[in-house]
Length: 337
Image 1 (tube, one colour):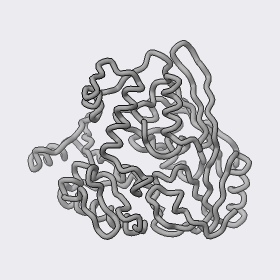
Image 2 (spheres, helix red, strand yellow):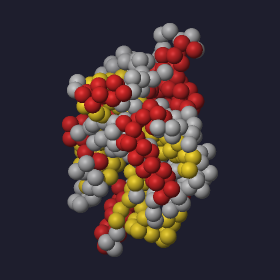
Image 3 (tube, one colour):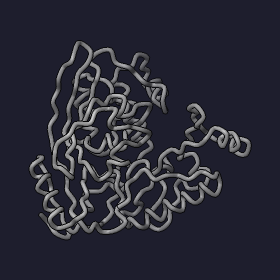
Image 4 (cartoon, helix red, strand yellow):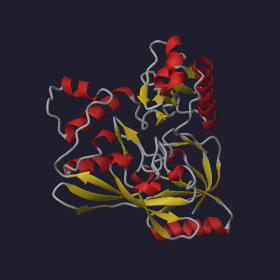
């Protein structure tokens, strides 16, 4: 157990914040001990994975616990299906690469997403037409009240767009210990129609892509437009893509004929990056915080010296200007501490 411990290495924004107490949990018993200590001292708890979805705007006056559970196991279900279980502390991208080496399909479009396996169901991570819910079988969690281990199936997780029970009424009540994914062994579903995947494959002259080809294309696209958090502090997409009523979208189209949108019934999902860019934020910097020059949806710690408050205030200005111009309120995807 450490006191007044710097969390700078544990968040991808590279913000310097301290935890009053800090410990690491390598197994469930160590995790239970940490929870019991927090209860005995009346401390708030914060569980750390890859630190890629956090913004510290202040010091954390409680116990921060780094989840280090490691291990991957497999259970072949039939000729075409396999259940792959990964512990919460496994690095997400390394886990995806492990599955691709085994030729297990389903996760290739989620290549190079930062963070750990344990946090992937929390916000139902997604990219290029795939979300966790598409391949999710179940997860085991520790109930922080009873200290019992429970299993959550797909239905119980109540996945939505960047959402799950763990961000709603289950927030702060559970810690994810491991996640089971149902993947394909041979009859893979190749998704190339989202983003620039098809164009990237065409560039390489690939006509019948494998899941490995799709992963490579996704990695190339992400690397070409997203900053590496090891070099420039960021948390990936800072905002969710807003969903607005179709009638509101039609009204906006009269005023902004180039507005982009993806209809879904009576709702339309509007790309947050496009809205932000139209308000002149792409590449804009204020103090130590900036909007990335290639992807305005990403806020960066431009100098490495930004405080969490600076980044938060910068995001608030973006929210205000988008609301003023389009009447749409952006929602932060990043967890604010």
